[in-house]
Image (tube, rainbow, N blue to C red; front, side):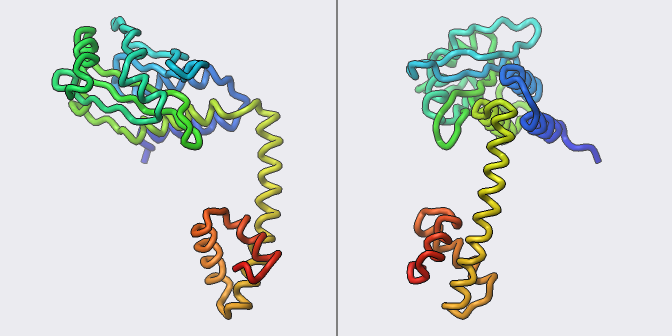
Length: 232
């Protein structure tokens, strides 16, 4: 059975992230794929301006024959989403809430019917937004919001990544750290298993639970246990 189109898109973009990709080309690809997958008239990828008080258009995809009014993406609620990391959902500009009535009227006059803005976030820090504008009401046809957010998340990851040499070095360091941490975690599990007279699997679960309670990683908690078994 062939994978659904959204799954193919996610797989292709994810693969590109493992290559020596050009950031702008990848962001343009994400924007184009987003517009096509949502059968949208206009899709815009926005980033916070350097002064953090507004947004700047990085790339856009426009359906043939549609003339976008670009001032729309420099107004709330689009700017609000990009600056705060919140999701904007206006299902139908003809029946928008009073809060966004003026924006919806302007959008409707330009031939648009609905919009979504999927925020770009990294570690809860807002980076921008992926704005999708359709000419019909959003729910007039199947549109997968989770897929849109996944594409926005991939765009955020792409923005956070360095060149391929830097990524390769970072991956090597991370792998070495994980292998080193594994040894410490196994030692800590052994300490807990012996002192509390439980099996290793149960000790591993205890490690994870107590680390979560203390708000630290399992590796960090394990280091403390190995250093001082009474810390457990």
